[in-house]
Amino acid sequence: MLSLSVFEQSWQQALAERRASALLRQHKTISTPQGVEICVDGQVLLAFCSNDYLGLANHPQLVAAAQQATAEFGTGSGASHLVCGHSSEHHALEEELAAFTGRDRALVFSSGYMANLGTINALVGKGDAVFEDKLNHASLLDGGLMSGARFQRFLHNDLTSLESKLVSTNAARKLVVVDSVFSMDGDTAPLPELAQLAAKHGAWLMADDAHGFGCLGATGAGSAEHFGLAQAELPILMGTLGKAAGSYGAFIAGSHELIETLIQQARPYIYTTAIPPAVAASSRAALRVMQREAWRRDHLNTLIAYFRKGAEQLGLQLMPSVTAIQPVVIGSAAVTMEVAERLRTQGF
Ligand SMILES: *Cc1c(COP(=O)(O)O)cnc(C)c1O
Image (cartoon, rainbow, N blue to C red; front, side, top):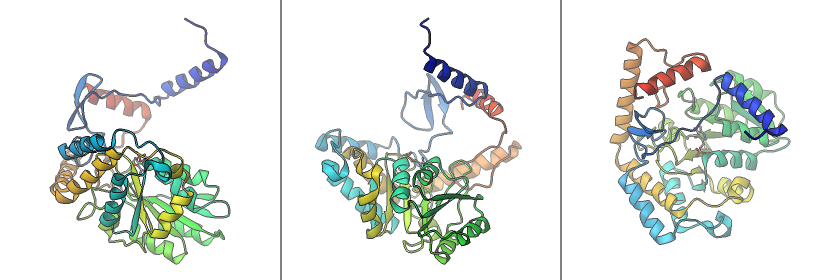
């Protein structure tokens, strides 16, 4: 065996420590499309961990839309949006997203991670303050940390904790940021109350609806629709297209002024290649299926209720979540990994 360099030795040691703490992250290789059953490292398993909540990631209409757009536009978008990568498919997707979410405009980003980083950094900086729920997604936390604004975390879903921080800031601009459906715990943020609190303190409210878009609301438009929050109350709405929409990418929806500001300032929007037109086309097909086939949301809710009932009968400890994210609290990382491994051997 070749001897390791000093760098490699230090990496190897850190990796060994992660492994010993049962925290080593590892790929699993999937050889089938997403679905109820997927083939993982050669073994067929019942899938409990994808975000393809509505079963759209392999839907024939999404596949056909991508194939047709590939035939028409080719594979790559060729450039960033502001150079010459913004195709008519991207444009139509933005108009349809704005109409669907009841906002003036929408802007498509290449991923949710980039949408969050780009938006927070475009809106606040030095001299401003950003307030984030403790359990926010990593992309929101990273965006807040990067922005140069004073970064403050409040207790999870705790309006009193948030208000105590809002009253004691003298920042020029204040941005409150939450997951509308928390990505680990599955519970929802009290968006109407947050909107009132933000308005009272002259702060802007941003909600990341990665897990609500497609699933919540009468037509699947997400948390804003579910809570009946108009653009004035929830001015910065983010959603992703890689989860319930079964495609890829993300968007910010809001006022004309918000979108124009992002086009000027959001670096992860400006300095990256646009998603392929075919991906935008499959997102457009997803919006049509989502709106037309409400039964997919009913079915999801039936399955959530079925899972909760069965888990409770088994005496498993669940969290108060009505969404597709259903955490079962086990405890230590080592025991959790052991449970996952045993489930895998049993076909889950
Ligand atoms: C998945 C997720 C993102 C990131 O979206 P991508 O499109 O996968 O980059 C952002 N926020 C939350 C809450 C998420 O769950």
